[in-house]
Length: 279
Image 1: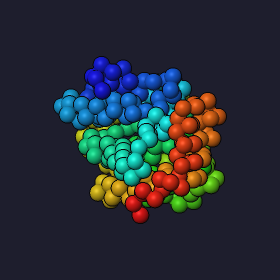
Image 2: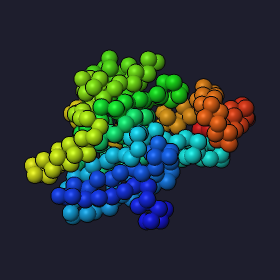
Image 3: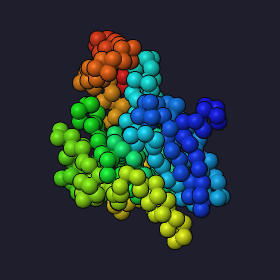
Image 4: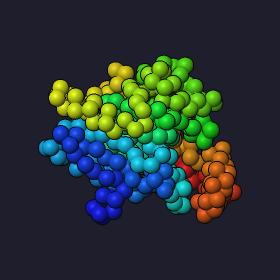
């Protein structure tokens, strides 16, 4: 990705040693396409190397924080085992991007957050949310296991019962107020005060010399091991009949016919190619 393209997808501004990264693709609800994730990686790498950046704030433009990973835009047909290995690599690298970041990260959730954009936020130092924000982790409905270390980390933040409400069949989508009460996030403010409060909190972190930390008593090395394990499970689940059928149905409802056709092709031909997957 070119620097110009990355700068368009993720806006960067710095004030008082606080660098704010703003996902800027409101037409796609700031969804994590390959391009958006590449732009985020570039922006985080530059912030990590910037001596004038002590704290990073991540937020989004428009009414959504992010609609999550765009599966139809990130997967391409190929040899099943090659594709499985690519899913493992892609999923693991996505969350390692947050786990390996060495400066404090504050997520300012300006609206609905879905899937990996929720679980990645829990790997940061804090989450401040606008009152209009909601938090959805629809893994059970999609037929995939938890990712982003949520199989372990989410219960540490909000208790086992609340974690299962989000990750399990109920598919609970807490509001900002509910997420704060449960312990998923660290603060809630009025929508029009979100970035002012995010900057104020980040300024406090700079003044206090805050260093990178993980909430809930989790440690980086442990979370990286969890991420690797979950990535294997996610990749395996992506080839299940339930997941392939679910993606086809979902994409057809969204009138995304070409990506839907890809998942239909995989489902129909599964008896032939599934034997090519490693056990």
